[in-house]
Length: 206
Ligand code: GAR
Image (cartoon, rainbow, N blue to C red):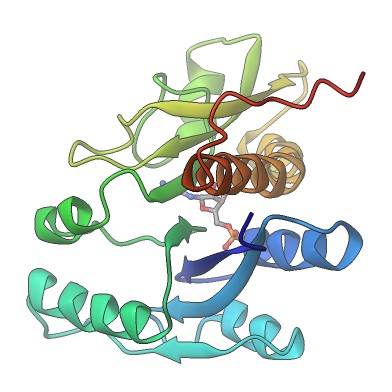
């Protein structure tokens, strides 16, 4: 089996999920390696973190650019780096249909809700207003419809009576940091197994 899947992590801001993905690599021996951290926000804090981890970075502002044109630039950079899978980690920009089709089945995203509930923004405030007992996060495949692709993994977080959007967001974020590295690792393992013609050979640890 080829050693690792080359992953591009796309970010727009803080980069705490990127940090979790990079940390996982330090602690465990995952089936992915981060080939590039790319951002549409050149001043994103996550780019500073990426450099601290010694990861290659690329950034370009999307401002004043057509969406598809910007995505073609990103696409070219990822291909230059032999990227196989894309992990969106707080990438707050819609992708063009053309880009999503080109990477069909190979773009993962982490979203701060229990999909299919609360697609889009402001998820925690909406869950609190609705009186939900649980919030959480989902890792899903990206399709052309926003936050609607197949869910690969989820983690539930109980909503406490005293929660506000901020306290809830902090606990969900901690759950994201646990979930995303594991889900990405598992997805990459499946890709490698399929490539080796070993699909379905699940190691049950007997
Ligand atoms: C995370 O909570 C992530 O789930 C969310 O943005 C935050 C990024 O934080 N993503 C979305 O809302 C995408 N729809 P980070 O930059 O610290 O990883």
